[in-house]
Image 1: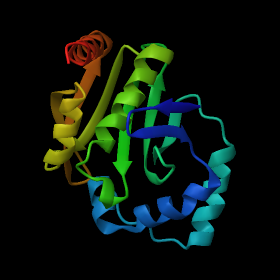
Image 2 (image 1 turned 30 degrees about the vertical axis):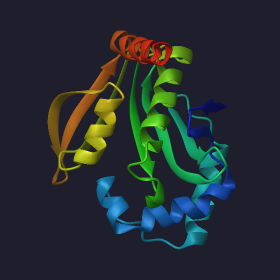
Image 3 (image 1 turned 45 degrees about the vertical axis):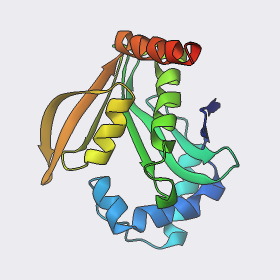
Amino acid sequence: MILQGSKISLRAKKLSDAANDYNWKKDAELAHLDATQPLNISFEDYLYYYKNELTLPFRSHVELAIETVDGKHIGNCSLYNIDERIKEAELGIMIGNRDYWCKGYGSDAITALLQYAFGDKDMKRVYLKTLAENIRAQRCFSKCGFVPCGFSEKNGYKFMLMDIRQEEWNKVRAKKDSNIINR
C-alpha cells in the first residue's frame, strides 16, 4: 500500500527502516514527545522484535513509514485501535528526522492518512491524543481539521484529546479543493 501526499509517500514498513526507528526510539526528546521512555535495548534485540512485527498481520493496526518524494524515510504514522464496528480509529504520527519539522511534512502525512481512513476504510471518526504542552503538534492537527475534545492524564503525562469526524473531513477537503480551483 502506498498513499501519496504532495511532499510525502506513506508506505508499508520494511526492514531497512529499523535503524532509523531504533535511533528515534532511543532519542530522549522524541520519546518524551511520544510520552514514553527512551528505548533501552540493543539494536540486535530491537531488530529481532522488529522482524517479527513485520510478519504479523494486524486488523486493528496500520503502521506506515513516511518518505519524502525522493525516498528518504523521515518518520512513521499509524492508525491503531481500529474499530470496524463503530468505524473509529486512533491516529499517531512522529517525524523522527528533525530536518523535516515545521515544513509541512507532518500535515501532508496526516492528510494522506485521513484520506485513507475516511475513504478506503470508511471510518466515521479519527481521534488522537497529544501532550498538552506540544503546541506545535496541536497546530498541525488543527490545520488538518482536528478539534480539541477533552483532556486526559496518564502516567504523569497530560494529554489534549482531539478528533475529526468524516463529515467535518469532507468539509475540510471541499474547502481545500475550492481554494485550489480559485487560484
